[in-house]
Length: 316
Image 1: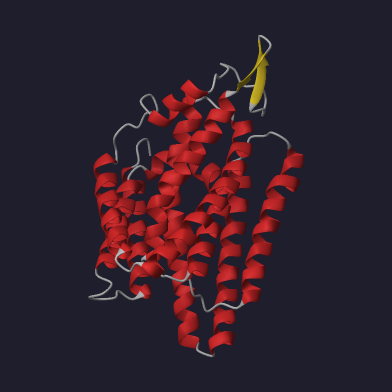
Image 2: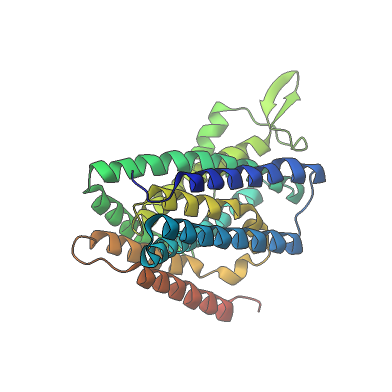
């Protein structure tokens, strides 16, 4: 699992993540349970994107300083940006599922922030493990690339056919299993995950929501992580682009929650992106598509889908 970035950049990355989590769990905790407004979500979203771009600039400088090559530094910087953009765009699909979960369980807006904060911690830990395992597999078995590529193509096709159809949690097997394993109260008890009813300690609906959010992220990570490995095999870039996209997920959720209907066609665009990335991975030993081209294709597909969604949005 080779990477050309210096050790000190790993230290900086870990420090940024720890500082970000400190802000989320210590500083924001003082605000207590409250509904996050669009303005607050927009401010945080801008901050996370700016921080990600600043880190990408630091990555460029570190690689140039280590290798002495501007070309290599630019290539690595483009790999980070493309991976970040892919992960960020696929995270929108996560957000729509999170919104469905919150709606299904009627989670009060004031409690949603804590669910997402804890979900981010779980996502970082689980994805770090999956990325390290994936990098090891690719290093040991080159043919895994073709498996990843075929999987992404099939996932993209499945996403295209599922786009626009009404989603429901009623027949969700994970939810049915959780309800069999855990007795759940019918009412929330503030932000608590456990409550006492008739002298017995039972789970609150908020614990069910946390469990489903975690399971959802694992499922989506199976799609998104191979997509980034199609851009770069450098574990540092795969990990950092993934984590920076996740850190802004909470703010992006509240930002898009109010405008979810305006992105009703986005899944079609995400499906095309997955098929493109999967095809790129399948052709890697025949023709290597430049990272700059991949970035342009992803940006183009997202732009077309956004404009298309805006023009055909209901009630606009």
